[in-house]
Amino acid sequence: MSPTENAAAGDPLPNLFGADRERLRDILAPMTSRAYHATQIYRWIYARRETGFAAMTDLPAGVRDALGSGYRVAWPRIASVSESGDGSRKYALALDDGLLVEAVYIVYGERITLCLSSQVGCPLACRFCLTGTMGLVRNMNAGEIAGQVASIARDRDLDPARVRIVFMGMGEPLNNYEAVMDAFRILTDREGFRIPPRRVTLSTAGLVPGIERLSGEDPRPRLAVSLAAARDDLRDDLVPINRKYPLAALMEACRRYPLAPRDRVTFEYVLIEGVNDADEEADRIARLVRGMRAKVNVIPYNETGIPGLRTPPAERAVRFRGRLEKRGVPSTIRWSKGRDISAACGQLVTRPVGGPSGGAPGTI
Ligand code: SAH
Image (cartoon, helix red, strand yellow):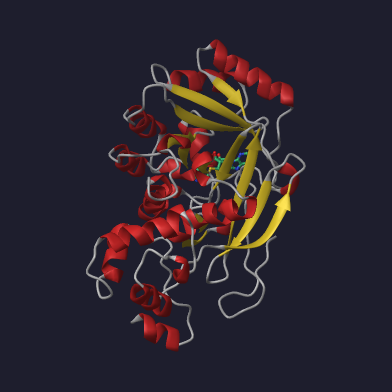
């Protein structure tokens, strides 16, 4: 369908936000013979985040007009914001079809981290995670993924080049590999958002082929793996994808992940009272990561109403971490931010109210 037909049908014009250079070149081909116009547009869209073609003054008026009548530049719209007492903010962002995703703005002292979603819902159904209860609604596209940064940067008046990015929101990033990597390239491109690749971390529940594929990318994000258990019987239950890619294969892929000089693979370990918080489990983690450049992030389980799962007392988390350190494993306890606004790890979940044909989107 041509852009004009699209417009005539009353649908929104095709969105350029998310397009890479090659796609921009293809779109511009009928409008101009000059290849550098694609680079100029790329900069307008991603470095300056300009949404009006009229403002793109270094482009010939004819090109601007042609773009304006056939295309638009747009990123997800903020449907609602909840502000936490700790300064974090949870954004519900509306996609074009009315579905909602959540992204979180997190402040640690001077540091700002944006936690991004990669899918609406998630297919992996980890026992402790609320997003998993939604199932996979759909994949997000590259523009929607990178657009979360545009949306929050505009709202907070932030220079995106200064933030850290974690793909730790809704969804399994390696289950939506192409779109996530397309977004990663836009976010890290020197003519795009200019975020240094080393400040971007991708977290996976353990999709081994995805980790292997990521190993071959350059640039690539830093790797985090949601471990949750250090033995297969328990991990099969907590992180069902483990039945397909058991710990031995997962750890092997992690060992092969190419690391920058001072970098390490992060293992996130959601600590659940009476389930995986025994001293022996810390010892098992230490055995798993022996000889590896690894660190462990202990995340005390955030209660989400899932029956039988409880947050351990703070002393338990401290003891668990101490045990890891004693076994030579660098570790930290990540006391989740934004718990009071349900923006913490494992608490992101949305439900559309209405949908493509109208009605205000909402969250639960
Ligand atoms: N699917 C990817 C990206 C999501 S990251 C992944 O699993 O890595 C979300 C992180 O929050 C994961 O490390 C997960 O283990 C953790 N998490 C999920 N539910 C949680 C909960 N209720 N409390 C604390 N951490 C949780």
